[in-house]
Image (tube, rainbow, N blue to C red; front, side, top):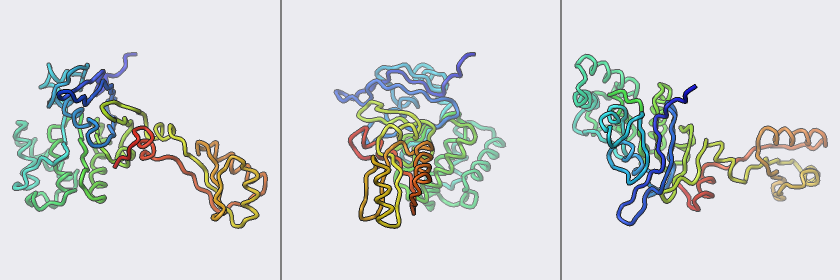
Length: 311
């Protein structure tokens, strides 16, 4: 049975500016209907990748297909299949939200009735109906970002590029944008997300690639990436020194916190480990007052892989 064609396929992508190599032979595969997050610090090359895939820049080398098309030789077909939301909102602050959406519909030559239906639907989907006739200059940052995303969807693209869509937003606005993106995902849209926010990748992405100094240094699901980094453990707390001492004698590999009557048992912190710890407590009659499971986060992954902290 033939394999489905990926929404995005990149092999050996290279790009340099003068003597500075920005992308050093990266490979990317994004299945249709999935969310792919390219995670990395400022200057890692994330925006350059988006510019190349969205036809705004040309690669020095590499085989690239977006929606099955070559961005260089089939540019119009790629552009008809994609939408792009950049780092800065591309809205006219002098127009209302509704006027901004109708402007995009006119640029796409949508028939009037179809444009009206599409605009009203997007205003509803992005919770902008009450603010539709207000000048965008009066919008909050989160509302402006939601409108920007809605404008990207007027033409019903099958692939959306979101280049650091929540940079500079407060936490509440960031979560509002995440909810909007989840709506796209539920509708089957393929999303290519670049971000320097670890939580954003963790919340939204099916697959994450870590880009550092022009190379992809690791990729997988959030859970797979976290499992690559040591540090997972199960922490037990005890009500008195006697129970604490008994636990130390049984869990010999554990590290201890004498001042808190607590021990940390290393492992994967998965179901099997947890079951083993609970069984041992039952068998020995040791009473723990608290149990908690700790696994590395994406920030730990990023620091371990790149030697640098991310946002």
